[in-house]
Image 1 (cartoon, one colour):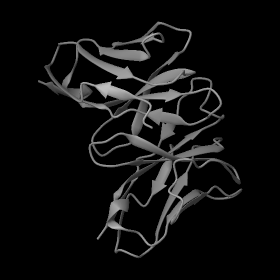
Image 2 (cartoon, rainbow over the protein chains, first blue to last red; image 1 turned 180 degrees about the vertical axis):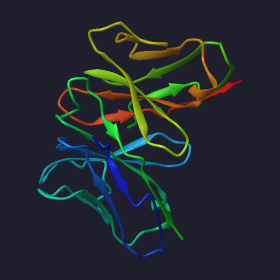
Image 3 (cartoon, one colour; image 1 turned 30 degrees about the horizontal axis):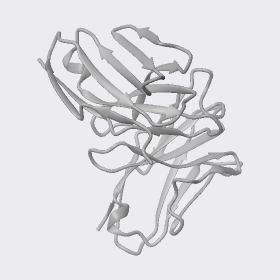
Image 4 (cartoon, chains in turn blue, red; image 1 turned 45 degrees about the horizontal axis):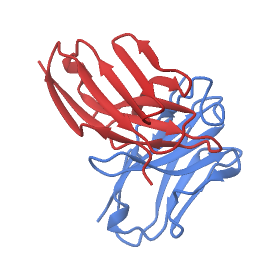
Length: 117
Length: 111
């Protein structure tokens, strides 16, 4: 059973370009979370999605950032017109139930590291 | 606002010693979890403690929860060099499904 798959693992963009990060949750998981991590810091919640629905996007910047989790295919975190401050590691986590499994556990991918030049 | 704050921010100990990390949070929680992150990697779940529990064990890990003080501690006994990592607490609150992570403790275990 493959874990949470994120790609690309590393992405370099110039200011003003678009970054598109993909997350395939674990098999059977229909709940996806996106977090952002700056160097030497903790994870900041961005968005929580279920299949075809955004449940909580309270951590998403109101401009330039969007997320989706279509019926088929991976979840996508899209950052338009990137700026240097968007440079960070973006982590995706999945769970089979709202708020985690019976254990409450989130399963994390290895992250996508975005560098904006 | 950030829910969890860990202390110390960094901890360096010798192999075989015990490591204790603390997490404080601000609002009522459903449960609290501890995660581990090796450098450059994703997070791995270690242990979960529910709001009605006071202590939990898993192997060399011992977690306590004091809801009156809104704090938790993670104890790693007989540490090993392989325990070198960052450790984060994460809390979930009633009415939401998101988990809020703390700032982390960077543990270094010297061989």
